[in-house]
Image 1 (tube, rainbow, N blue to C red):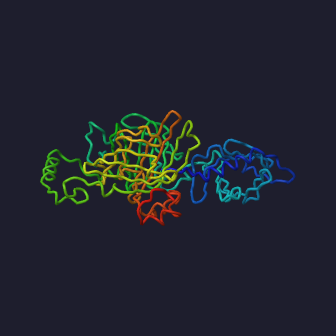
Image 2: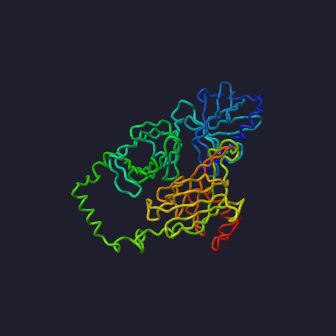
Image 3: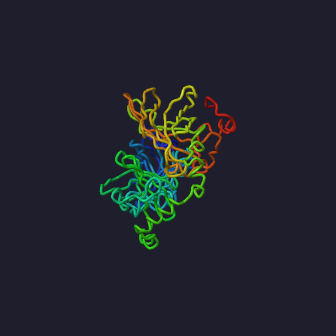
Length: 449
């Protein structure tokens, strides 16, 4: 889930290019302030309504005595002059001036380089340099120790302790977007984490975790050997311990099992158990879809594609035996020239809509490079489950030229994306306003745009 603030980083790289030709600027008398002198690190970048508080390493300032200093962007440094009038600090870089307002041990540039880029630099070694200060509220909530108290399987049923202990997960989340975790006694240090509203994740080679922020804690999904486990970590363990229901006795469990067995199908909601006694997945999955996909962690010949994205359309078929097929085409192809095609099966999931599991297929090249369970698309356990009828397909591509990771975001053809727009307009498909809204009420076209 992840466009990486590309506009902000592009602006910062322009500043980096300026530094290659920096020359010292002289002639004006500057007014130095010993309290301001020191090194400053970039702690927050804001542009076009998007904020970034990490990935800013390599950008900084150093205010030296006598009104001299250096400015660093993307690791390249050059000289500058600075002067202070007690409320603002003005930098002069290669004849260009940038004015910052003074905060408590920080400098705030409201319009750096005249590009609409707001940057905040904090003085090293001060409280202002704490990265936790600049996180969104949903991320600040994460900064604590988390300890699981129970665990359920993908259907929400309790897991036997011999399979997974209820307290098997412990996390300590830090403001620099790393966390330390202990899972089943194994320690993991410095895992990168991200948040999108109330949903977050760790996606590393060592471990995969996703979570959903609830009113009283975290529901955290952990995948082990293809099995999903959902841990609950309370915000206030002591308060939770006082209100948590007592463990059921064996007799109570047997009694409940007998009652469930006696329940008739008429008592089960139709959405869970429709006519025929089995879940019908076609209503949710079958038909045409529209969205976009992106690639990241690119290597080899694909490095230049890092962060690129394309709009996409798809069609999914669901057979009576819960097998099916999906094929997708992007703006460079057509329904007759898809970039991905796969055979799939539909199984039970965390919601009555079930989940779609890959069996075999191809992505980008004709060779089979999608295998059994390479995709496990469960809308109820997804980072995008906050949005109406939205799915995310996540996978890896590799050939002799290189590899990358991909994400495919889809909603049914004809669906509105306004819930996505309200969170972040950058998550809309590129052709949404210019093309899709004009054709979405008809049949899905064979080509995009």
